[in-house]
Length: 153
Image (cartoon, rainbow, N blue to C red):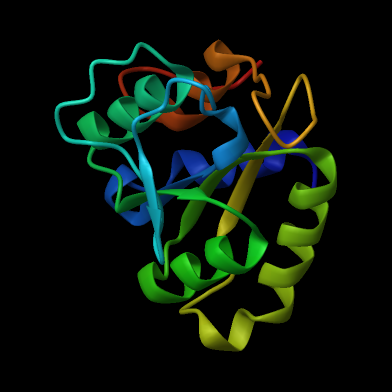
């Protein structure tokens, strides 16, 4: 399916039926006060760190997203999807993880209410630690269909 078709599908999905999946490698590894548990990286409620993970997580929360998972890997992200059963997903990871993730979601369609629409935003810099993403592009994807945001491009 083309990017434009995916965008059109996500436009019709309320934020309350979407989740945000972020790769843990986006966090600033030397200064992040977050801790991992079985649900991924957990940012402290009083975190004062100015980082892309916090910005994206906050944007999704403000729009009423069904959840945010800062995953340490694909298995954790898939478990999160099985639990939340979203209709829409904004996923941020390296190209390899995104490709494997989209394929895995398609294979587990019987465990979800329906196959969710997935908007994938690849990292600009890979490496599994202190990676980078176009924050504005992710914010556009998160906000797609809200407050007059109609397209990613």
